Length: 390
Image (cartoon, rainbow, N blue to C red; front, top):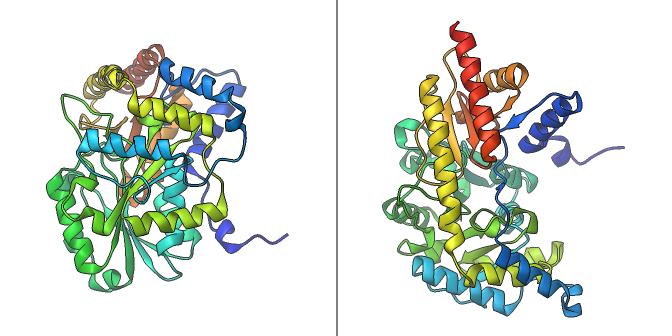
């Protein structure tokens, strides 16, 4: 049996490997506390579930859904963007619901990247940006995100020969995995840069509603001229704890949205309609759940930061997102440190190298861990440190 080269060259997906390691430890009867995967542990709010159950009883919603989603959902998305960011969108041309944002993030390369073209990809970054590029025969040029540049890419440092072949620029703020945030000044700069070099900007923004200390993340679509050069991916997964329901959206430039809709219509169907009605309830109903969830995450963030400071692990307290990005102790690699924590105390953290070369020297800890497990995991980390010191 001969597989396509594109499949043979794919690395194992990072979180699949983490899940395998956790399962192997638990199969041996060993306890594991995981800070690994950013999957909210707080349930989907009850009013959203109630609307889902109602819609599921309607036989109309048992049939194939349309690719472009229900008009009511597109209208709800447009209204949410207007209320949240003061961004006006045409729900028929500038909004497309997705089966989770990951679907669109992976498929957008099919719209813009031909073999030999380059996508400008943040490093560290969500692996799907570069994997989607590779699957269509493109190349990724990695933009280092470092502590020294506040985890923002240095657009002015991209070589001319790279820019001549580049078609697409990926951005992601609040950032996964670093927790960094970006303001409108940076997004305005990105728009000017994209216009200068004929680039499409794709902003991945699933964490805009997860923020702390009174901070309110902005949308790329608020930047002057953003609608001319780009699109923004968003999701209900993190905002409303709906990861398992697989629903997201892309908004922005009408031609770009239409191109993705054309690809999508040829590769999959739409979102189950009962889930679409749940999404409408999420977007148009009470938003109090967001502040409630953020209060839980902020408390967890503060507990993690307190423990990391005590054991001498350097990290910035994130202002947005679901992750703490921490330097590994001196003398360790990211994989080596993560492996030691798993093997010696049963604590799972994600090695930074899994997000790109510039992730070496870091680990990522997720805030999506139940409070009892969080306390236990932090106690285990403290015990590991005490043993090292002793």
